[in-house]
Each structure stands twice: as C-alpha cells, then as structure tokens.
Image (cartoon, rainbow, N blue to C red; front, side):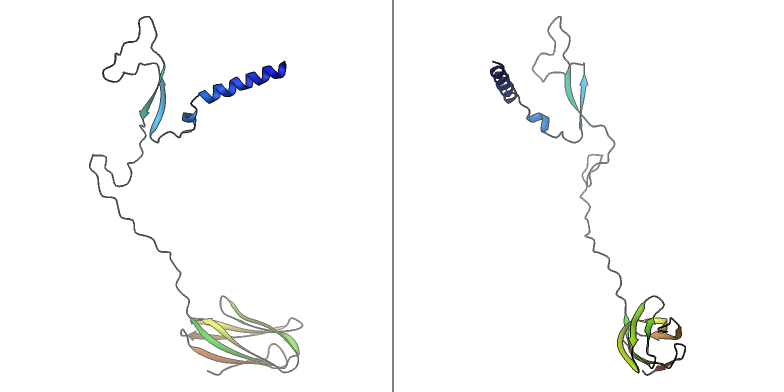
Length: 197
C-alpha cells in the first residue's frame, strides 16, 4: 500500500513539473536590465483600464527597468545621438628581437699536459668547454662569437684544479672569420696566444 502511494505521489509530481514552464528560469537576463520589485501599479498598455477592482490592494509586480550604470557607450557611438564610424583597429605584429650578428672564430688548442680542460669565454658566455687527456693533444673548433668589441678569455685547467688564463681584446665585424692558436706547455699558467688571421 505504501509503495503504491509513493508511486502515485511521484507520478503527480512529475506531471506537475511537466506542466510548469521552467524555461524562463534558465534564460540569461539581457545585459543592461535589472529586476525591480515594487508595490506600485504598473500602468497598463494603451486601451486597457488602469483601475484596480474596488476593495483590493494593488498587486505586487515585477518590472524590468533600464540599467542606470555609468558604463561608457560602445565603441563607435556618441551620447549626443549621432553615430561616429567605428575606429579602425590595426592588427598588431609581434615584436621580434633584433637578430644578433656573429663573427666566426677558429680555435686551435695545442698542449703537452696529460689531462685537464680548456675553455673559451666571452664577457657573457662560455663558447667552448673541452676536457682532454693524453700526450700532445690538439683540439680544433669553429666557434660563433658575438660581433663587436669584447674580451675573449682562454682558460686552461690541469687535473689538480690549477688554472691559467690569457685574455685578448677583440673587435670583430659581423660575418668575419678569425683564427687563434692557443699553445699550452707543461703547466696551466704557460699559455701563448697566436693570432693567425
């Protein structure tokens, strides 16, 4: 008996919900309008009587009023009733950083030390970092060097961490080619730089 009553009550609720127009609940409200509830009587459309029945209170109604916000008018409109042509929008192009110009540097490193490492650095970057081992090592590399005035550092480390440094101030033009021979004999501090080109 209880199950039947529950089923009948459920069917009645489904029918009741199906008969209601709930579609207005899910519609978005137009922008620029707000809902306002008042106890004033809304004047009826033209041609209809505007008096409430005798002995009754005026009904509570919902009225949509235009928004009174102070947002600026959309682009291309004027508040004085004249329309201006919309402003033309120029497409923006992405800003690409200027391409860095390079020169080319051939480095020939020759040493008779048995083990260590050799580095070539600029003021900002490490251009080469090479570890070596063996007797009479010769390493040749072609490096890209930023064009312009800078100081090149040639650094040699032995396997015990002792280092030797030689510097060379250069001013390379873009796309130019230069060659430097770095000769290291017996100890890291004994470095000779030979500019070949």
